[in-house]
Image (tube, rainbow, N blue to C red; front, side, top):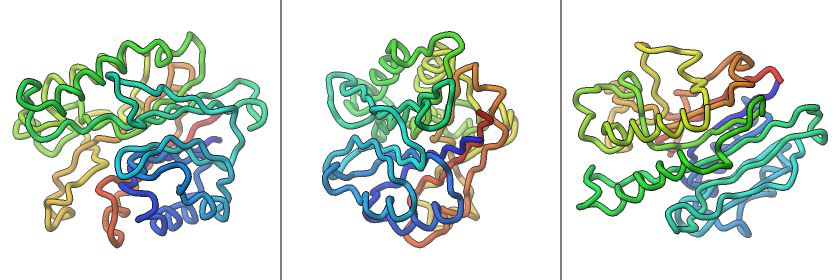
Amino acid sequence: MLRVTTWNINSVRFRIDLVAKFLKAARPDVLCLQETKCPDEVFPMKRFRCLGYEHAALNGQKGYHGVAILSRLPFEAPHTIESFCGKSDCRHIAVTFGERAGFADPITVNNFYVPAGGDIPDPEANPKFAHKLSFLDELRDHPRLHPAQNARAILVGDLNVAPLEHDVWSHKQMLRIVSHTPIECEKLIAAQHAGGWVDAMRAQTPEPAKLYTWWSYRSPDWATADKGRRLDHFWTSPALADRVSLIEILKAARSWTRPSDHVPVTATIDV
């Protein structure tokens, strides 16, 4: 089994104790973090090594964005798609697990942080939203995100879109809210289909069941209101689609002290 977690941690140094709490309890083989907000040279690698995660692929910068993959298993040299929309802003990192990890057939893990897009769902009035739409188009078209037939690949991360009707607390009320506008949903689904990716979370829990991974800081009583969104995703190539045996959304983590507004999502894969 291979257990892979994706989690937008919203500052890895600020929340390193929460990360440690999670890793001690859950012990995934691979942890994919987004919004690390940390240059590589000051990433808290010593703490991860003490927790048993000796292998790291980092793509970070000061104060914003940033992605990382931490692993208990060795992987091949990491690779990064450095530029999306002409910006090098640390939104992707990938590694491949092969013979060193004990896999006869390699598995590539892509970790993404898609732009949030600001508050106004108008690309002419809001450059951040225009950037997000362009990013999703490049995600759809990038050849490195189109796994070859029979390739074993995973794409995870905070993709900042809740694409389906039951990925939000109220489809009708969210249609004009960034993250669930029709154009964003269409573009993310197009990127998924273009790469032949399978939405593992929805394969495990089909609609109309609600699935959320994010609850806003703006809600004073988020648990009672439960106005969530599924912004974090776990996609697999077809070769792994029937190998996902369990997906766990750790909703309890949203109640931890000074939490991220996202919670960990962990998939168990029979490799």
